[in-house]
Image (spheres, one colour):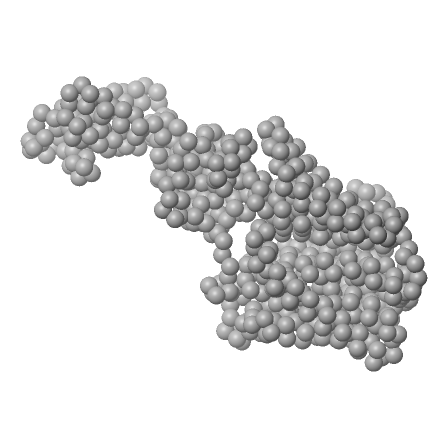
Length: 626
């Protein structure tokens, strides 16, 4: 039974569903919840998943690959260029200083210099998955600490490549067949001449950039025209998996390749749709990865050497913490931001599992040592949420800092105050008017052909279904002030209104109405700001017609404004009537009332109307609007 795929799937899902809400409820965060779930279902506790079940980690690591793709989508190339000093400076210093410190301590304990150097480089890595997931949950990605953490993690992911190239040289043996996963499968690049290998690597990177810039937009355009959401999702997954396969084939990091592809597509009109389609798979695979880490902890080894292993965990995390604090101070992070930055990155990351496996194959480190270090890595990852919680609950409050620092000096905000859903003739006019008045807008449209045309015209429009709350979240609805609903589909408008009322109740809604009957439904849905797209234009035509027939221009304009006020009041009254006969009667009475009103105003605009007449207030309201 335990060997069944469906049984293991049920166990993983049940563990996540039970443990993560509990962990979130007590303030431990989802990452620690997943880790604890893995511990409980693993060999150490309930034994639902045996030690062989931890092999799923090689599959679950794909969640890290997807996460970096999504991060890349959020980073425009110009923004990445602005981070170059942090990436090279903070990231380079962190790996260099940490490697030197750990290697020096290892030498002091009598470890061979080659092994000491390898240990230093591997231990310098931090957990991309845990850190970025935790920062995203706490809303800290756009702060100085979040940007610094991202820069360091990105440099670490890049540094894996030269490490994999350097380790065989340290072993003083020919390069043996390997992959990033450490399974001993030969890569394409190793079968090529030495002089050709760098060219193949550069060619693979160039292909990703060119394909992302010129080939994928037409592909997504074709898929979007089919109107099949599942096909768009399949295409997005194909893109990520294909890049991962290409990078692995040439011996590079799949995570680095997908990140690069994400950056290239950051300016694409399909960015938000890609992000929202990939995000659920990323979340599930990351959760699976964390549970695999928890299940992989060898508690028998830990119980046999508790002082050694926990001593190494605390010693390594303290060393990294000191290095990171120094780097944060050097780069002028405030005290609170420096603490968040340092406590977040002081663990050893998931790439250490890969690198330790590889060094064991190369004969650099003995299996007994890699077993101990693998346990150390897993425990340090499990301790990270606790370290971050300790910092948030004990250290930061003592400094007078809130858990989420929202001071302007620390936050890099790129959110727009207005979101426009639908960019046809109605939404386009609104968008151009707002932009002409220097109001930033985020525009979403589900018509791929329209998006393509508008982008050719120079408009920044994203392809995506605005009725999906996850896409609205990505587009910044949580921080925006107003959403203008200008989409054509009546049912989609009502669906979007319900989504906004449920997930973004503080967002002011301005909604387009196609006609009178559509406006009734919108009013019954609780909308206060409804704009009938044909009313103003129709009245303008009426005014011009009266003028051409010899009426005075100001009288025609006055009559149109009075008609508008009366029609708006009548609309509210008729929207509440459900019976057809009652509706017809009320509509006829309204038309007769309007005729009397306009005739009375035309024949005697200054005549004092009897106080008992229902139209008295209406005429006063209409005249007040002139």
